Image 1 (cartoon, rainbow, N blue to C red):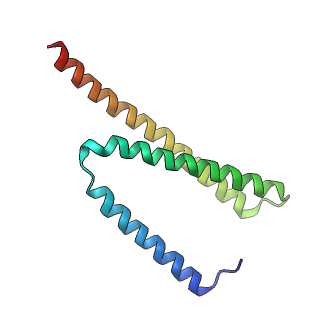
Image 2 (cartoon, helix red, strand yellow):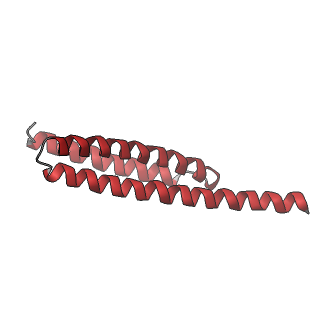
Image 3 (cartoon, rainbow, N blue to C red):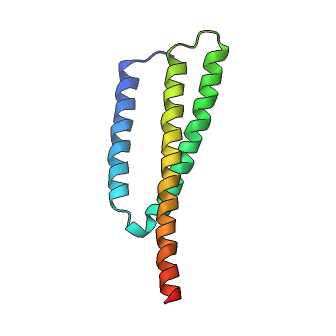
Length: 107
């Protein structure tokens, strides 16, 4: 697979449009939907972890790991940090909501 100028421009265009769309979409989300949205983002990062594991397995089985293995490792580390951090923040938000409900019910 060779990278031509046309595919590079198309890839950069899709990337920039994805950034713009993501920013517009996230900025319009009401605060009550942040927790479910974060759980969805965690699921997407989980898919990234699986893809990085498959890529690293493929890179190491070829005998010459090279750049693909390092990129797979970097993706694995960043996606894992995102999943763990996302679940920690989601858990804290749910505890805050549960704490408000307990105070209202007990009073």
